[in-house]
Length: 445
Image (cartoon, rainbow, N blue to C red):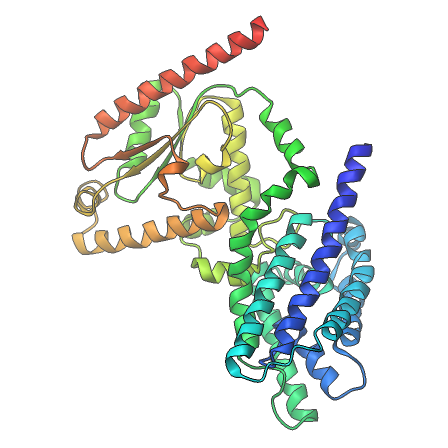
């Protein structure tokens, strides 16, 4: 219990640090005189024609968000989120104060040349992204604007990412209206505002994997080690595959040879039951998520943390990942797709396979096995491979076709599926023998 309290305290300290870094990043962007970030655009414009500072307006506006949120929440929701709701108040006071401190400390920063303004704006985007990355890593609280979007998305039943995007656009429009009414032109909203909206999310996504070094300090490694300590039931084979490479057929063949179950299309029904998402939605969108860039913009680095405002794609990924883990704990099996190689990373007794082939072989297989004409087959191969790669990279931070993520890369264009199956069966047998030897060693010890 004492260790848990220590780790929780460290996470709160990291969160406060992240809020200060966020404020410093906003100040850097603002000082570039190319506009400010969308979330602070209204506060910045208000500070331009009133005696209050941007930090003071940040406190006032965020407290208005806090006051409005209960009107959009049921009593049960408010009770469930009471800690997160109440903590917005001290966080808001700190955030506004930190913005004024940061603006004051950067009084020396007055870039006049446009290249220097761009440099200052880009530096601010990187700093802001660092702060958001650490905030998400701490995962103990939410700033008022983010919590407001989460409540609003839940109230209207919308996707968090798109509601967040609409919220940011609304802020920018309102800032322009205030500026035109009270200043006589558009001030405080420029190319820097757009750049901040476009750049911060992808930078957060790039930085997130590097935060794993904090796992031990924050206590996450102990939780992971505890899960890994459980002995797996048996060997599991995961198959990632390019479209047209025959990965599903190889999975069927392998499952039959090994006498184990194959899990592929069954995931749609299982994920629908687990997540509450409609099966038709899963079938349409499972491998056709928005582009990497759009996903980063929509999520702004927030969507991948449990307990935050999750998009339907994020909920689906979490549901399928949980199913993958449960199946691996339950029985030996073959799992096709669903980033299973990454979800089961570090787990003993997993044979990770990537199935690929040349373009002509893929087209031939699509026309002969899937009934597609040649032109449509070529387009589908390109579209689905791009979608699968984007999906994998977004949720794992790694390249989908990187051989370092797998135990075996199989070119089904240079061998038959029977030959490929033989190779995997031998690897399966070796993995099973290794597990038995490890169990025997633990027993003797």
